[in-house]
Image 1 (cartoon, one colour):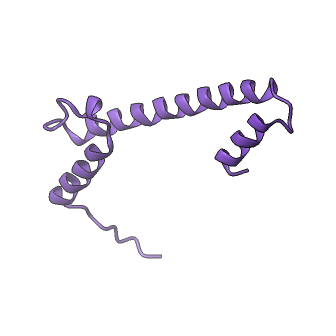
Image 2 (cartoon, rainbow, N blue to C red):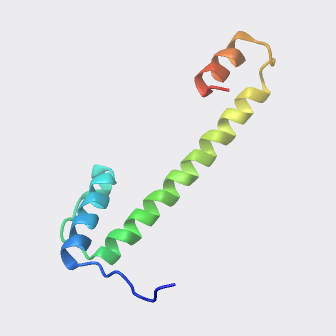
Length: 85
């Protein structure tokens, strides 16, 4: 194995940070145009964690909803077709 490492240039870091910033919702991008890459990464991690919490919450709510329905009901069938299962 080679011990040679590829280095990333400042320009590449700025380009990647810009791409990452564009993925954040507008409310999280405000005041982020001139922050360090480190702060941008921290904010991105917080955003991803919030998305995970939202997915968990929605999954739980959907599970609760499905548990109140008959398995062969039209409503349950609609939900299954939406979810693709």
